Amino acid sequence: MSASAWLKMKRSWELYVLLLIPVAYLVIFKYIPMVGVQIAFRDFNPISGIWGSPWVGLKHFDKFFSSPNFTVLLKNTLVINVYSILAGFPIPIMLALALNEIRTGFFKRSVQMITYTPHFISTVVMVSIIILMLSPHVGIVERVLTYFGMEDTNIMGEPDYFKHVYAWSGIWQQMGYNSIIYIAALSSVDPSLYEAARIDGASRWRKILHIDLPALVPIMVVMLILKTGEVMGTEYEKIYLMQNPLNLSASEVISTYVYKVGLLGAQFSFSTAVGLFNNIVNFILLLAVNYTARKYSETSLW
Image (tube, rainbow, N blue to C red; front, side):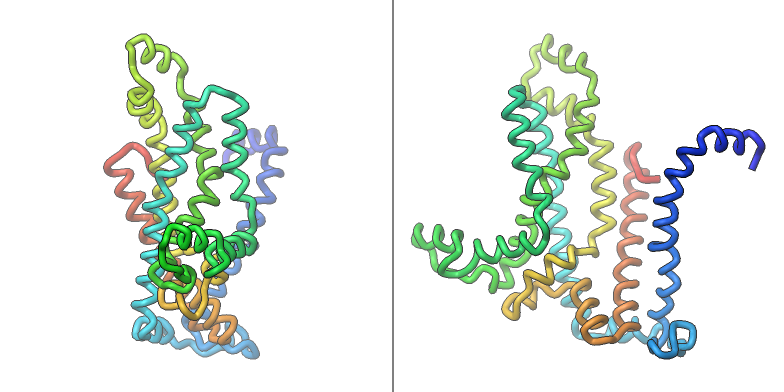
């Protein structure tokens, strides 16, 4: 490192000290544990340890790919996540655009507080609310359906309804919090653009179409890339808590399968192989979407 670089670091040493804590966190809790990934290629024995366990190569991957559960797990994981992304991605954008058009300060702050609050509800409480609302005979949703003459249905016990309940409850819980980044982007738009549009007689819809949306496109592309990179990573806790024997055919995903096989079944090597496969697919999707975004737009992660 050159002398000038050392001089700059010395002048701003306080910033590097602050940076030291998150870097240490990443190294200790993210990178060093990667040594344990080799368990996926060994017949891990806790007594022998990682290095003493025999090397078996791709044995556990072959076992997973040839398992009758592989197709079901992959299908459920993709269906739930792709559905959640397609249904949920536009909602925070629309909420941010709507809030940006509100001129009454008290009403705007009230709407923001009401939409942000669900984000801070814990997963356990959230799932409890869902189960109580959808409970047959006593749940408020069932009572409303019955009042309008519809058939009383155990929604949480129907596999076909599971992805809808999971996706839309997540959208309701996260839309306010996810809209913050879009609201911040809209606040940086030059006010003179709105003034010029108003002088030209542009309607609110035209302002949104020609000023607001172009300002949001770079953020939208980045957020979509990040969301796509998580397409194989479902919210494990929520899925697991929402599962029951009746909806298991539609709710069993790779993350819950890894938990049940790895921790409950003590098949550590096999579950590590399944988790590694899941992460590799996510990484490949992230690279592919980022490459596509960089090729067809001016915005990408790198």
